[in-house]
Length: 297
Image 1 (cartoon, rainbow, N blue to C red):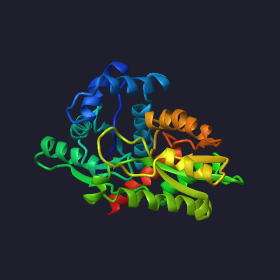
Image 2 (image 1 turned 30 degrees about the horizontal axis):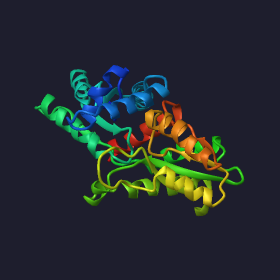
Image 3 (image 1 turned 180 degrees about the vertical axis):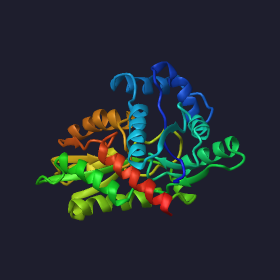
């Protein structure tokens, strides 16, 4: 008999109401309360996208879809908010799961999501009845590459005169200097999607978006610098492929759909965003395939 399997999909987390934002920002800032100005700015961003982010519901849909294809029980845990990773692990242990596949919905930064899963499992399953299977970075997996390539095609990335701008969340450069392979993983995934699309190297570029408020340098180029470069090259139409994001969230719905679109328009560029995979069937199949391969290893 096959072991009872659980699939835990984890994500960053988001609030369910604007009233939760001050506490959420304090968690993100590792216990340092946010300034009134920062709370006001983030509140404005959430209001601009309708008052809340769909990230939690979309992640739950991803877990349901992938777990069904895998023949597993699905769980969702958020690293910085609820539903928590610890609660998800607790449910899996209570359900009698014999192996738990940890699949972060952050394909380039899997380690920081596996850590709280492993810690919770060590505390909640001291007899080690549950084996933990960690999915490594999977942003360049062929199944996910095809998902992003399909979204890019649908957005008109192959139309004549169109440039493609891949984006991923920026990180402080000090994180990379400590050995995080994030930018290498992101660059490789962009190359694979471009190859799948048949794009020559002069047709695409990579930008890092949504830089945080902490001091010190962050990965670049940022979106403004990228739009300046594209404008200098007389690019009239750009398709953004947010390769670092599986789901719509404030970083997509505000940072790209509102803020970046305005920056592009100021430079005479028509900006089109390729849809995120969200909770669609092809992403569920890709996630299930990645989990299957991890279990086989």
